[in-house]
Image (cartoon, rainbow, N blue to C red; front, side):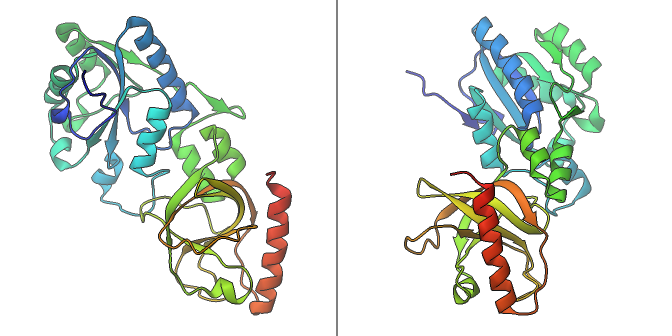
Length: 311
């Protein structure tokens, strides 16, 4: 029996060659617009008895071209792959994008897809890949006629509150802390995951012990503030008050993500993975006159989180 392959990190390692419909793009966030395109492609693949696959570029081409390494991504590449597979794709190809790929001629890239994947359809929006972005729609249609694959171009297919959904819109929502818009565009709560790190344990001294989350340095964080979120730990779900920012009352320098899990009475969980799913922004981050004022405000924040999150 052939082993089922779900994630491929290079086209060369793909040994299971069979007729495939392929969606190509960055898919950062895997928002409702992405999901609509994928559902359509997967339905046709299933009807035609072929494999459905997604090829996602990482790093994002814009990051390589600009040399920028600041916070940008909506999710980690592992989370992106998990979301794409959860959407129903048979296989996800994580294709590295670097200067070598940037200089690859579009003809050579298409040859890899046809040879290694047996691509019969390619799905996407405004195609422009390969050296000098020569792999445009006209090029692909010409190649497809000669090499036996079809080009399926799709426009934005999903809206939220009357406006088109895009990864850029999700990033703007995160920058504003607007989780009504972010979660509406994603079709789920936006999540951050990371290892719980040992920090200064200052929260314990004021009665609110927090988990300091180690977050990938290129992951885009919501704007500074206090948030109502769900914390998932050891298979259990807790309401959480989450602070993102520099903690101006006690630090003022280092930006952190800290979560206080309401009603958690278990052991310390340093080194464990904590997942935070965001519901709403409670307030902006602010500086207080001292620890007593900070403690009183956190108590009010916790009560607002209880009222915001049904459990």
